[in-house]
Image (cartoon, rainbow, N blue to C red):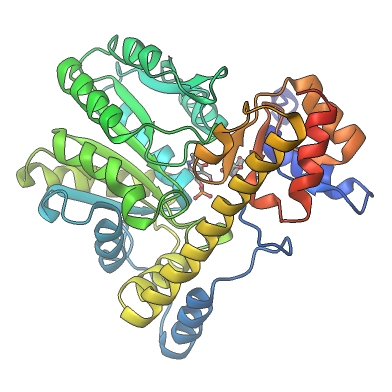
Length: 394
Ligand code: PLP
Ligand code: TYF
């Protein structure tokens, strides 16, 4: 049987990780995979995570199975973090998942299971795994215009035109904050217009929230998701703890399905449990328990939030520094959008040839679509990158 398997294209982002590792140059700069790195280029375990793990090690007496939906205390803590009091708790069904990707996958499965006709509208561009999983599940995909390469911002008029084509039951996949891969985001007024459009067409929103706390702050980054959830009769949310808790490899995510009223929640919850059982049975627990320990302990929570805030501000500083440096090096304002973008990523707007040139000539690694991980920079490498961009004539 194995000989009949077809080779699959590799994930470009993960492939780049390996090429970077294999590059012998000592002054190489990694702006590839979306992992936060501090000024020393390290991805440390957050203080509160260490403390929570220590506490768990001391107090945990069993590792027996938990439940198909994971620990209810984890769902409660995460629903509180993501949704605040935007919707009644009783209208939210939630399932722990292996990472945000697990939540995305389970959300797609739920959509396909509930409405096999549903088309999923995704931004152009979007995180490549959205497309890869949708194609794998043989779900119909429609792209909506999103990024305006001229301005580095959102092509909002194009987006509105495209999502207006949704039929009742179609799904609009939205990045809750810190759009991956572009870094360009909607403002509050634009979010409201998207909500009005979905109310008009009868489309169902699915929010992918992988970077809460990396953009404008923990509360501000959840605002759009909360607006959507409060306004729409039904909403799906795929949340990830990988980045904001720095627990990438623990695989910690949550899928939330918000119903119009609490009477629908038990069926949604049973379906989420059913879907977990079909795919991996019980979701991973360790990361979820660490997150719960942090979020439910005021001291750990405050320490976590403050370390996350430092992380966020360090990325904002790098953005500003890079935009300033590029203004000096190029004598133009055309990269000012870098300081407006939010989150880890920015799409620079360079051609694949120029991206390759930066890699070959300068050892600067960004994804082929010119997505840069801002956290891969530090105050010493910002001027090096700016000079290279200017010299390459980007
Ligand atoms: N969604 C988006 C847009 C992402 O960028 C990521 C990756 O970090 C994820 C979801 C899920 O990440 P993970 O599965 O590592 O939690
Ligand atoms: O976009 C990124 O870089 C992160 C990490 O298959 C990632 O979301 C990249 C590729 C992948 C899974 C995660």
